[in-house]
Length: 192
Image (cartoon, rainbow, N blue to C red):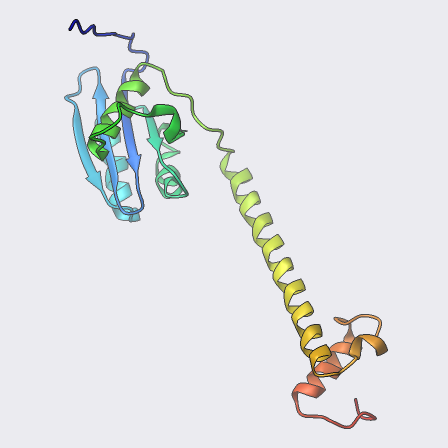
């Protein structure tokens, strides 16, 4: 059996491949003047800051991360100011099937990064990410408020209290006062 080795030009001088999991970050540095080294870190900020310092001390300029889910976000947030960071889809960098380990994955990612063979996912700039998070949170809160209003109306209907028949807005000032009075125990219809 004749096996051939395929070599690619090295386009990035010093890089780091990172395999990100919920509680484990495995990083491999590679490049010109560097002895290949792999280290493991946990997902806490203090550990991620140690990762950042290690990469800076090693002269790393580019970082490629593989992650599924949202576990990449804290790592990205810590590294984005000091390095060119790309997030790659795990499906796009599948290694040889079988005997998959985090250490092998991080080495493979580092190798592909140095050769310029990775295409990063689009990650918007920090202000846009923050605005998206705020907008999504606002939408969620508005949906929760609407859901609670519907739940209150259903409870009233189940109790045969036809408040929606006598007020135009179930969340208006009058309806709110009537509901508060009901909660406080008022049963006199004239008072309500």
